[in-house]
Image (cartoon, rainbow over all chains, first blue to last red):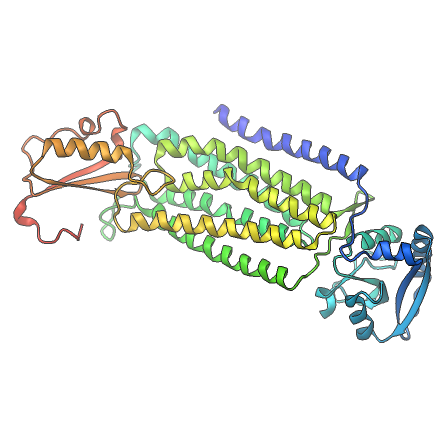
Length: 152
Length: 308
């Protein structure tokens, strides 16, 4: 019957060591790299290209986030107006770095682009609910992490 | 009534305990993977593989309940082959899922879809989800490796194919976990293709497991000769038994087949001896419980040799 005790112990030890390892890794980790180099380009050109959907100007909170991101990268925000679909298409192609708008997490666009966390005070919103948030180009994980870090 | 041979009852009970532990621990692995999944294709494939690895354990536990039962009117030969049937079902499921995942990852790779892994908030700290994925994957490597190593010797003593395959698959699970970690690290370093390439590798390993298992299950369904555990070679134990039987009845034709974990033998063209040797003596130094039955067919009762 000693078997049972032995079998249950090692995984518990494994969880602990994995947790320590990951905490260590995460502590010294930099942001992930963008496959299409958005963060690098913003740093180089000193410009964040923001898509603004006609009739929905960024909220005060969104503007503060943009200011902080711009400050960190030594850039300014260049605004491009357009309609929702047009801007998301340009985001997908990499012509725009960010799109601000009211989007639902369950939007049909959620496979083509990445929708960030809601910008309002409420964090738990329904998947169908359209709330102010930034949309990002898929896979630009460093850029997403940088902007999301300033939202929180 | 428990018809399990005396000699293997302890190991059988131990195998059942190990499989319950597998269900519990692999359940925690699947949960950890599910919680941290995110947008990685490799992680998704690894999660599905871990969820599938519950199937052999479940199969074993279900078969273990049915196998020791008494024969019935409808099943006059009992249920010793029930785990072969379950094994075939599991193998087919494994192959189908492996094939589907290969298609999916290949498409992701071809469409050049870039996986998004965003940061998440954990206890007030913002952490890149990729690190949590790697932690879950590391956990998913350790648990099956330990369980697999514990099950392997028991499976050998029980001559149990389901348990053996289960143990081998788990022992090899480090490859899946490692592939998943490489995929997520690839995302971290900006190589979007690393993720779907890792997913493709994992899917291939699922498919390979499935196809190998189908071959093993098919051998028994066709009344094949007893095989070594984990290979298609004829078992040494069976070859030794065949030799002994042929020495005792050189005029007859000796045929052995596998039925579940047991060997069934027939000596054909020979009248049943008045004083046949005990089955224990026929097995020599090999475990005697393996030979479940030996029958003799007199020459006049034989019509076709291709129907067993």
